[in-house]
Amino acid sequence: PDETESLKARVRELLAEKNAVMLAHYYTDPVLQALAEETGGCVADSLEMARFGAAHPAQTMVVAGVRFMGETASILSPEKTILMPDLEATCSLDLGCPEDEFAEFCDAHPDRTVVVYANTSAAVKARADWVVTSSCALDIVDELTANDEKIIWAPDKYLGSYIQKQTGADMLLWDSACIVHEEFKAKGVLDLKKVYPDAAVLVHPESPDAVVEVADVVGSTSQLIKAAASMSNKHYIVATDKAIFYKMQQLAGPDKVLLEAPTGGSGATCRSCAHCPWMALNSLQGVIDALEKGSGRVQVSDELRIEAAKPLQRMLDFTA
Ligand code: 13P
Ligand code: SF4
Image: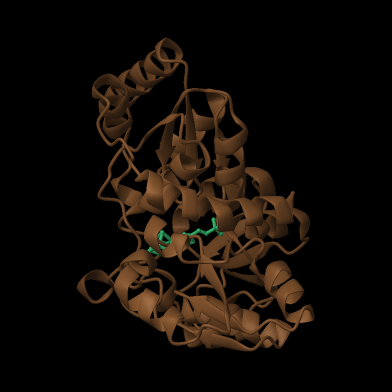
């Protein structure tokens, strides 16, 4: 604990010295979330991180999250220095959607509007008409469908399938998934509900269809946190990364009991165990190295940035 305190003190000092601001996703270590908040930065979902970064005047930003979040900040604010505690922090959805194969998919369906999830590389975004996050995907696809647009959706097949069912949109789905959310099991959730019959089931839409079907609330990280804060149930079964419990408990209050939704396995059989291995790469030492040495600097080429900024800005304008 003493070592943590001295690392935290060093981060505070460096942020002030460099006039830098820190953004942290709800899935990062609670120590980083608390520090980002305390130093005037933000703790948020991926949409709010993008919005906060684009609007904040600081010249240097430390983005604690995964690679696409750093790239989004850089695309929206090319004049700023964007640093990440660990550049290896990727995402299985980003890895599951290589730009060449995606370009072929788009080329094969030129009549379709290309909608990509924010969890993608700058190159994939550069090919898209729209970027969406789980906070705004339903509203944006609803609007496109009202305009009779047919859609290509990538990369998350579960989020895509959920949106397709909700909106009735004509969507061609890319076949990829989040390794964390795809581990949740509907049977495990229902078994746990037998033990806590009053429990509300909160599910991130990157989870498999069967898990989404047993949910009381389906939503982005910020929407799930709001649900836990506003509902009156005592117990909540939560199907998303367990680092969210820090903010969720804080806003829901100490009397509510948050339970992890069961995953398919444990120990060696569980690849992710409800915690994203890439989000877990973010550390206090990584923040210090980034600010002291300029390591973890996110670079996006001008060519990609100019193209990727268009669908990203469209998302921000739509949700403003
Ligand atoms: P949110 O946009 O809901 O924060 O989700 C980001 C993410 O990576 C979920 O796995
Ligand atoms: Fe990607 Fe899943 Fe990790 Fe979110 S939790 S960053 S979707 S791998």
